[in-house]
Image (cartoon, rainbow, N blue to C red; front, side, top):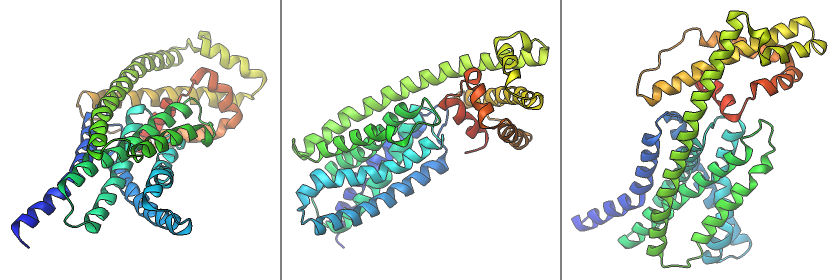
Length: 342
């Protein structure tokens, strides 16, 4: 193969694959608290690749079944198919409380979109040999980054919509999916020349994600500070024998008419252990933020097993009764998974 042809092929591949890959790497490195583990990023990249393959099959079937030309397919059907398949893993992670803050929702979503974009551009690289470099500038800086950005937006909006309760129905996240589909479809309407569309994506997406990172890290710092102090006060009151005089202690005493003594004792143990685990998780994040090593706790598996036992012992009714004082937000639920290595 002539040198010029080899060089052009490498240039096309770099233009198609490098921008979205470097963008994802930048998001991961900017995460001060290392909220998203590398193995999860790799899993999501693979999920995005699988979503691309499934989308190819479904889009081809739709085009054949309904006699759609490629332009109509790209404008209307493909965005709905592709964003649904890309967004599904993000929604599953949200429902399983594996995502605690907007920043990790953005990283998880972008990783999925990046996997999708990499697979799609590799497919087109094979299907369009000898294509112009300008095409790959558009695909690499425009289409590929758009794929990552729409799924990141889907994750952040869905996180905002369903973060307030552990029992929010899945349909509450549908507006996030509709928004992602609308952005994707708008990009595919070709209102502007392809190069202009690519420039618009590059101009708008990075500032939007940087704003999200800044806002999310401010919220995380606030949560760490106030939550750590409250947990410490609660543990100090329990250990110091003054717990009964605190508002939490008085509330627990008010439950005596509704629960038997052994269950109330388990509730107290549950509150104490919840506060201890919460402090441990927040301490881990503070160490990560400052680049310090996180020491392992050999007793953590036992503590988590005890916590799970107490949770089952007090039952669903007991957990609901404690909800007003524990106020377990999405972040609080997520931090327990952090301790378990999820």
